[in-house]
Length: 88
Image (tube, rainbow, N blue to C red; front, top):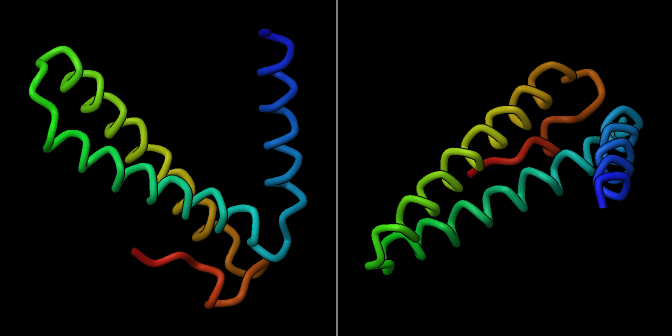
């Protein structure tokens, strides 16, 4: 299982390096935004304190992922046009 996860991470890294049009980064960022919205809804509806803490941790992780992907967009503007940058 660890080898499978390592392989997936390696493939993601290669995809990011070879993403000259920004399509892969845009897809990742759109998915992160979608997950954040879903998590926000779940967080508002959840009553169990244990699950609330898990959802809050997930929100923090998604915010960090969103910032990282945003940084990737800003660091390589020459590889993408203005339209490929995702906006919330």
